[in-house]
Every structure is written in structure tokens, then in C-alpha cells.
Amino acid sequence: MFDFHIEPIEEKLSSNELYDLLIIGGGPAGLNAALYAKRKGLSVAMITKEVGGQLHNTTDVDNYLGFPLIQGSGLSKKFAEHVDKLEVPILTNAIVTSLKHEDNIFKVTVDRTDTYRSKTILLATGGSPRKLNVPGEALFTNRGVSYCTICDAPFFKGKHVVVAGGGNSAAEGVLDLVPWANRITLVHRSEFRADKIILDKLKEVKNLSIHLNTQILSVEGDMMMKGIRVLDKTTGLERFIEADGMFVEIGMIPDSQLVKDLASLNATGEVIVGADQSTSLPGLFAAGDITNQPYKQIVTSVAQGAVAALAIDKYLKLLGGTK
Amino acid sequence: MMFLNEEVQKQIREFIGIIERKVTIVLFTKEEPCDLCEETKQLIYEVKALNDKIEIVEKDFIKDADDVKKYHIEMVPSFVLLDHEGTYKGVKFNGIPAGHEINAFLTALIEMSGVDFKLDPYFVERIAKINKPVNIKVFVTLTCPHCSGAVQKAHRLAMSSKFVEAEMIEAQTFYDLSEKHQVTGVPKIVFNDKFDLVGNQPMDAFLDQIDKL
Image (cartoon, rainbow over all chains, first blue to last red; front, top):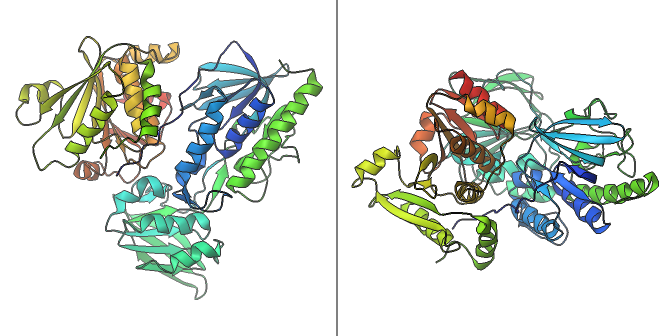
């Protein structure tokens, strides 16, 4: 009847210790890096808002080898339990407010107060939902506009909801809304990018209208959102779609603010990494959705976490040995 | 049928094994109809069975008017936590803390028992300046992974200041209240029914809102 998602027991980080590696971010990339780093004997700790990261924003995962159709939170739990067995200290519910590099030491400040030190850093902070950046979107955020279907779908019981986007996240968003909304309209500015297997599931959804090649121009309403104005790019006609809510599922923007003055970023704010996940700053590595790798998948993030940890181990050995 | 299977029981037993002193859960329910009263009761009894420092006192929302008033109970199911001296420090849950909210519940039990959550001196200083009553409502859904973090911060504020009361509100159970506060995104954090924040915000953001009251 109820699921219970218990987070791992927090082990305290030490402000006195100079870690070999501090991992910022607790999603698939960070967790696998922790596993590999610990196995190499590095003194490693993790600082994260939530263990599992974006896995928790996904209801079902059906493309991770070995786990056909598992809940995102279920896969997160399996990852976390594996890391937990190695007793990696993890500071959760923590927001890193600054990252400094002084005298070849990285200093990580959490919630503007506690500071931790490390020889190397792995940045694996993933991303935040990308916004449409259209008039009315900010005004009606949390007044109808939402970016988390798994969190907020229950508020749209019996209502008409728009899903913006054409990738896997948008298609999965539609499926998350099926138990709640009485009508769903998917709007996307071009053609579908979602996997065929998910698109096939959409065909079974009743009360779903799909508007491709349709651009959202604005979100409108008074106290609450009342609908969206769209441009049908095929006919060139504008029209208003009445809706009680809209879930924006158009990808992520990298959470790279912390390193914008430390490492090279590309035009979209992704951290530029080499084949070994190193950045332009020696000792600073990055993995997962925050990097400039083109495909944002759980499995690619996990793999990058492993590569980063192994490269960090090598880097530390060249630097003069680990503890 | 038990809510907590053996594996989850083992995890919880380990999680709350560090409880230092007695914690009392005062549970308010009422006779039918009461959505999730029985389920909430069952859950807290299943958790109690995993640690002998947890006690439960049951109250009726209609019959125990004095207690309802004492703990500012406005809806059921609802429960508050009392420390080892039986003192109410403003930590309240409205609705069942299942799903991701189990973490907020277990953490509150641990911290109410006296386990220090080591608030940084910077925050201690800011919290010490609070000098008027503050009510913090944190609206959550059980599927929201970001919500329990917000509930935990609100509860820490309550435990750290005699002026602050902080309550988790499970938005689906208390749908009318959620509608009243126009909740369409969670966690929605409402301060004295006046100002609000959405998202698992840092402690600074909570204190900034309190300063505005």
C-alpha cells in the first residue's frame, strides 16, 4: 500500500581531514565514483542534496541493463546500499555554497558554514529542469506550472494538464499523469525525440492529444494558470489551449555555477571534460549530466563516475601518493 | 498486513538505533470517517516496535479537547513529538509520513530524543533572534523526493526556538487545505499563512522568510 524510501544513515564528514577525493553530487555518477574510489583505497566522502539525484524524478527505469522495469527510487536504493556497504561518509541534505582552490587544496563550503578540504574534487551535480523562458512561465510556476511530475501530479486530479517537451522525460511525464489527469495535451516545438518503446506506450493513453511542431508562446492566467498560447508552426496560426497545469519536461541545464570561475564550460554551461573526466583545472574532475558528453543516460553517468575515480586515483599517485 | 516488511524494519531499527532518550508520540485520530487515521496509527506502532525508547499516547480529536488545544491540532490524523521531559517543541506531522516522508519522521524521532543535529553557530545566532510566534507548514506528497529535506529543516527550527512550530502536511489527505494555499508544487513551505517558498530551500531561505514576518 505504501512504499518507504529510507535514506542511508549519514556518516559525518570531518572538517579536520584532508580527503583524497570529495564528491559533490549523489546521483549515479557520484555514487559509482564513490564505489570505485573506496575500492582503490582513497579517503573519499560525498556531499549531496539527495542520494540518488535525478533517479528520484523518474517513476520507471527500463533501460538499465540487468534491471528491466525498476522504479527510479528503487534503482537509487540499490546503488546507495552498495556504496553504504563500503562506509563512505555521505553528507546529505547539504547545499554546497562555494568551492575554492587555494594552494592546490580544494575547499568546499556547505550551507555557507562548514568547510571541508580535499586534494581532488569530482563534480557530479547533474542539472536542474530547463525552463521554456516564455512570458508567464515564472509568474505561474507553482501556480500551475511545475517541473516534477512525480512530485506534483496528484494536484491535477481530474484536470487538464499540458506536458511540454518531446523527449523521453516528456513522454514519461505523460505516463505519470495518467492516473491523475482527466485530459493530457502534449505540446512540442518539433518532432518526437523519445524512444519508440515509450512512444508506443503513449498510443495506449486515452484522452491524450499530441501537438507536434507547436511552439509555446506564453503561459496565461490570473491567480492560477488558465492555459497556454501556442503557435502551430505548420499552419502559422496562433491559438489558446485552456489548461489547469503544465509540466515542463524539456531537459536539464547543468548545475555548474560552482565551477564557472574554476573550469572551462561550453556555451550551454556544461563542464568540458577529457576522456578521463578531467577538467581544465588539475584535480577537478566532472562526471554525469553536468559534463559536455552528449547523451544523458543513467548508464553513461555511472560509467563516467568509474572513469573519473580511476583517473583521480592515477592523478593522486602522480601527485605524490595517497594516504 | 504489516506496512514495514522485514528488510525495511531492519533498516529502520538500525536508523533509529541511536535514539538517546525517551520520545513520546501523541497521536490524534477520530472515529470514522477519518482518512488514513488507522493507517497512520498502524505505521507509528510498527516503528515503535523497533525501539523501546519510543512511546505512544493516543488522543481523540473530538473527546480530548484540552490536548487538541494544547498542541494546536487542527486536522487528523495528526501527531506531535514530545521530548524525554514531555515537552512539546513544535514538531508536528499531519497525515501519514510514508513514502519519502518516513525519513523526516525517523529523523525527528532521533533529534527529539536528544541526538544533536549540530546546527552551525551562524544559524544558532540567527534563530536566537526569533522573538515572535512562527508557524511553518510544509506541504508534501509522499512521492516527492525533495520534500523530507524541507520538513527536516522546519522541524530543526522548531526544536531550536520556542517561538517556532513546524508541521508536515500531507497534501493529498488534506486536499482542501492544500487548495486554500494554492499548492500545485511541493514542497511548499508556508510561514504564518503569509509568505511561502517552494522547493527544498537552504536554512538561510527559511530564516529570511521568518525575518520578513
